[in-house]
Image 1 (cartoon, rainbow, N blue to C red):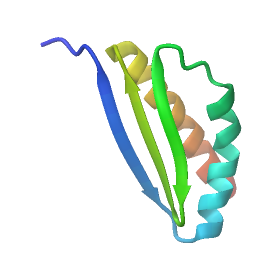
Image 2 (spheres, helix red, strand yellow):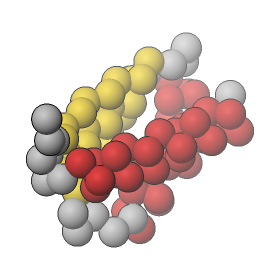
Image 3 (cartoon, rainbow, N blue to C red):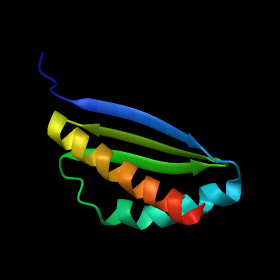
Image 4 (tube, rainbow, N blue to C red):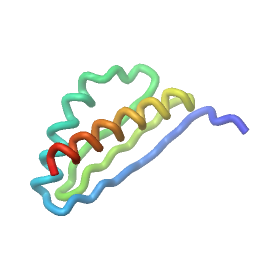
Length: 81
């Protein structure tokens, strides 16, 4: 079986809206500066939730984009929380 594209929606819920704001604000500059020529992403905050949607036309781009976002989010949570 060969994966030709990928798509994911991840919702992260935080204990407080303030922590969600801190994490969102920390990751947002990375989202805007990251080249997204082979993958697309939406990144938004709704109250205590951060919602990330990633899609790509090939498996390698999907994995790379998703891994980058998850690393940025993990680091922001560790430093902000």
